[in-house]
Image 1: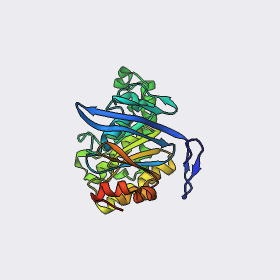
Image 2: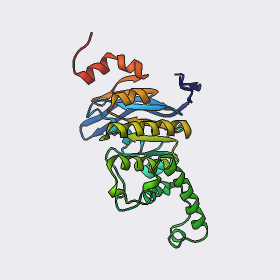
Image 3: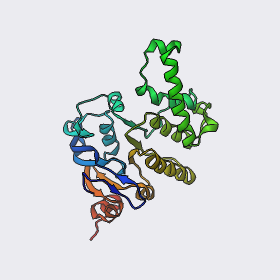
Image 4: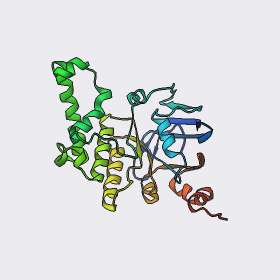
Length: 271
């Protein structure tokens, strides 16, 4: 893909210019390199997969993108500007939201209230007016609740909207976490193993929702996923990591044929 010109995929989706670029990222923990000199970009409107064996550095890379980790070397560029060192909440305000490998929801709160927390970075009224729910705060919360109700309808979780999250099965918790991330209206949505621990039916549902989010909302998505069938079906492009290094980058078909990628996954040499 050309880095500047928009393109149309085989299924009619538009892929635009570069939204985020990772330039020569190196991340160390003490003397251990989790990421070594990795560069790749994410384009507007695409579904970009980051894959690799366990311990490859995938989650560390997602944590760099979302501001949880600060690389010792390299630069993060977002929407055409070099991003200075930021805290995660500042990154979220830029329009980057994420889900987590281990579900991070509030078990004692209802589905609706959990999703509402995704709107926090968009709220403008002060703490006092929110506490007494008066004036502009009342109008603002009503508007935010309308947005959240649309997401609840979109993800087909109307019947559990008042249920405490702690009572839900695993697959539905994953869907609620996706809803909370969508509530932030992200330009870039980061999904850390969205299919982990799911059965076949739950995976099919999540794949459908991810495609719908990308298609109907126009949301750019970067995801980590171990299920290669899911990756090859969903992704426009795939970057492959192994032991903290990039060993492949391209379309699913190109990555599938890459001998370095084959060797990393199968652990054997190929001609």
